[in-house]
Length: 252
Figure 1 (cartoon, helix red, strand yellow):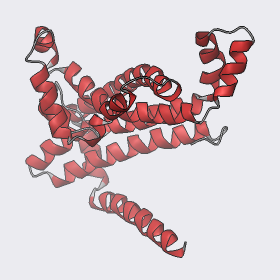
Figure 2 (cartoon, one colour):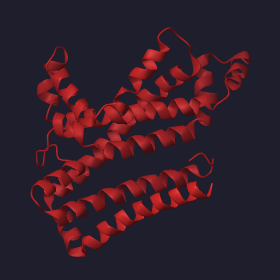
Figure 3 (cartoon, rainbow, N blue to C red):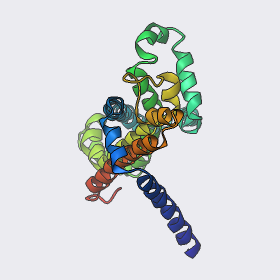
């Protein structure tokens, strides 16, 4: 037990020291100059907007799939379960390449002009990875809700749809919040698929992770760290807010 506590303390200390090192290396003038840069402002707006949209799409898909995988048994369920985890285990660059290749074949090729290396590509790349985490989170949330509640609702005259919305979803609300938080944070940190599938064009498809990459390529270490601090701050605000909202149920 003592060893576990020590390892946990060392890990937390490492994370704190990493953030402190970023802050110590970046002065206020550099951070303000970075925030005044139109390219970075565009990247911030695009990052926040695309992350929010990909999170909403992830929840839209994750809630029904998580419920299906939690409540129903069917032939091939193990294969479906494995397929849902593929985006989690695949290297990010492979996901980006796979999306790029996919949009070379009909019917996806018909939309390639409007998706590839455009803003929709950013959202799709984030969604492809973030949704897998949201699905896994929602399945665990539904697994923790006893099926007996649904059975009681069904015996009292509710159909399955009504039982789901009136009995299950109120109990799964903290799971939904956890899934949304995880999906948003994962979308914010997505880099590989976006770089390959959407590119890193300034004032077009540049998001904060690709801004870090571009600043690194330019040799601007101070600017790169300033953007990193912006990402850390945004992620911290979302994570802390989600946990504060979830304190009532003690689920997060």
